[in-house]
Image (tube, rainbow, N blue to C red; front, side, top):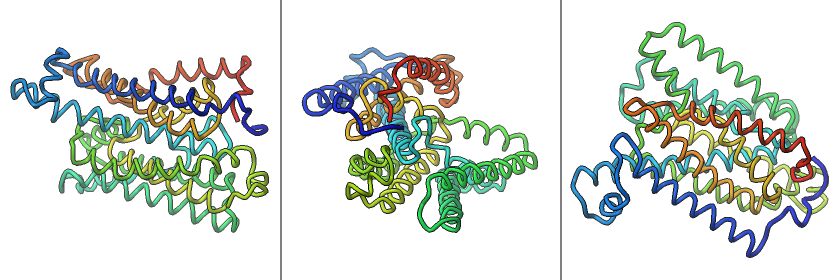
Length: 348
């Protein structure tokens, strides 16, 4: 990563506002599409009637109780993962970093698999998300303790290595649980780890919003320090940034953001890698723009992916993580080739 973001790489003012408005309208269009498309297709008129309190009871139930909360939850999960990816990329000064690189998803998966294997998941609808969130918090704590014992300052290289090692250890424990569990447990665990929004409702969507929106707001408030950290810690310190406080605040808020999304929807890959990477390639590296743009674009991307997941082979539903991977891998290759072919000056 080299140098300060160039002036033309930092869209501000009217231009930035218009781009964010376009992304917001695209997100609304994706949510509207998600409420109309499915195993039982609905016309725009029927959807609008249901949203305004009209229409028949069946249509209102499909739109208001099934599709709309699922679309809103997908937008929160996708936006949260994209903001987390952009923040991790700035923290680690690596445009190819992604939200699960520091072991948070491994800890969440371990908590979920342990709950399924030990029978705790049958205690109630919130048991599995709570177990996953507890596992994610365990991963955050383990990585922080290892990093703190190694060096007093929060070295991002040590943080990365500790996350990779913790993730590998959690994966080994997951394999142990799965090998000793029953066939039904194995199937449920694998489906959860591939990501799914099939159980979305207004209560868990509201709870997710209480985690995602404040965390995203905090990270956006740290956009300028993230810009300076992306240049280098010495430069950031010289320009007045509280480097150690900023690194810890970014790591903790981003990890809790990822923990909340994984606990609700499982491990959904590629959203936090591709979306901020594409935004940087298209519009520059200023995090004052990248973070809100990632929130909107990540939400739109996952809403579309979830719509495909539940309607492509209806009535069979695909895990949404499968769709994001199928779309994400070739898209990432295209972005990588474009970057290496002359777009490297656009990335910090």
